[in-house]
Image (tube, rainbow, N blue to C red):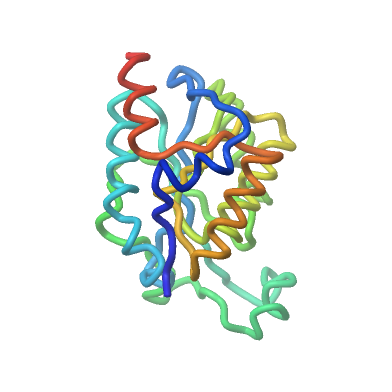
Length: 202
């Protein structure tokens, strides 16, 4: 069963710090919204599209990641951990979902592990754009989203983690990540908070 959709009320119990993103220095990361993860992705599509829309309206650059493997050389530990159940380039599962708000000109970051930063050039591109903050959305909350958020924090980016535009296989895993993020790595946000923050900044 897919899980996401922590309401504003449900995540406030985890929230330790509060801050709004700055659209002049933020980027939106949409993690792995692919056919392979459609069961987990579909429940968060309304929140994700809303988030993409308000970020686009605020002039925030949008990056989509696409997880794929091309040969055993890039499997890493994922091949062992998931017993070969991987996302292979050129298969339908590797393709991005069609209705995720992507437009021509939006960057697509190709990756082969949990982190969107590992060997992708994402950090360098963000630095070139003078990005200081990232807003993390997509799937899976507790794997690629959480790993990307943690690495962004360690690299010196301010991290905002969406509670309603991220999703994973069950609610316990989703909420465990929200607790971890709020405690040590990220400011929690949802669609309503982002709308209020970004509308105010424009």
